Image (cartoon, rainbow, N blue to C red; front, side, top):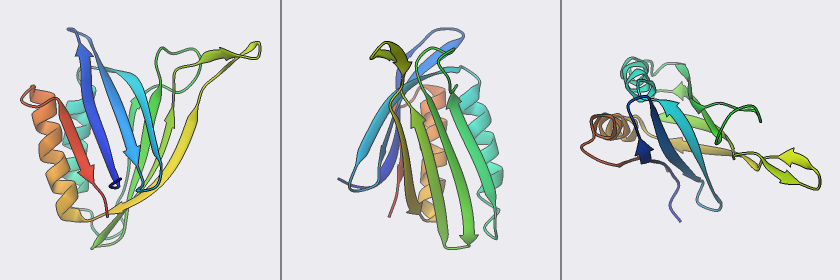
Length: 144
């Protein structure tokens, strides 16, 4: 298992996109699905294009879907941090769709911690652009 974050487009209409988010830290893998507005990925790409130049202490939060039992499907959140120019630290938090368990609503959740390099972030941004434009159905952030 290679450490990486994978975003796959599952389904879309004029307003909503369903993505499958797979995070692997090299030892464990967690997968969930999220609904997102069609414009959300373009906004993430735009913000990452700016963030990629913040190599000295830059901090960026990315979110797809919504946390909580009031929302359909699950949620994904990632905090990206450049503590030094050569290393990008990524903290992720994922929540599955809520389901009934022992008489109450529960969701599976996972936190993972990964590192990568600036050039691999640049590759990921390009893959996200292709995912957003419909050229590809998948984007991967390769981690180290």
